[in-house]
Length: 345
Image (cartoon, rainbow, N blue to C red; front, side):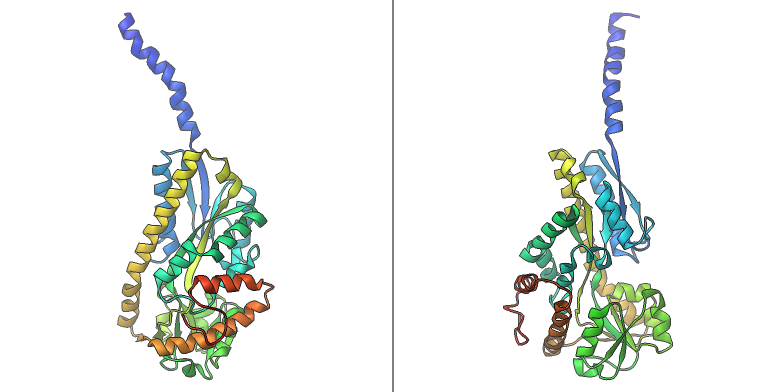
């Protein structure tokens, strides 16, 4: 073999350790979340798949995500503990976040936002949310990376009568997810009864409850339109979950990888938000086509909901040992002058 033939062989031998090292440098990180791996039924899955592709692309394959939908790695608390103790990612709901940062309940004050733009500005730019991010890192070693939409704004449904104002709630029974929802219903003259999501359809069908509240995506997911006649689009609460990651893991990456990863998170969330918002009218139309009567309260009616609902929720927050400063800052970020009952945006 001549010297000229040897040169490519020698070069390949010299490069092979580098290529092997590059292949070995890829790090696989688990990403866990709730719900089915179905983009039509789970907005969080849309975000997760976007993030999986973008992280691999932007980090040049140095980081790869492995997706675990349907709570495959455990329920909320188990998954949060995994992220605290190991290099991983998790999309948590309020049930996962609140034991560490109960202040997160402040972001669910009802009727806080008029639309998607209001909500996104609140989380992307607000001082309250920055404080929650800092608290989560200090208390649990977790980085709060993104607020992930899960289907739009919550709406009221019921099977008794059209609801356009708080007066229409009088005497009705509503399924409640937690005590804060009970407080909200009682403020309107209704009652709330805790019913797990898995039992909600049957509870509504048998009359254990007359109504409930969820975003249109979950109403479709649970086939609640089969047992509910009226849909009230009152923009009650912004429906969201939260991407968290092990802070030590993220801090341990070199600057280029960290920057690429954070860019991927931002872009994946932007794409998921765009997709989610584009589906809202389609989902409402689907529910209307399948027999639900859609009620769209006017500005005065929405103001009446807010004037009764917000104080009731704030009273509930007062019993959760949450410092008043979080409430004050959040209301300011959302465009309210104070937390008095008669303030308007």
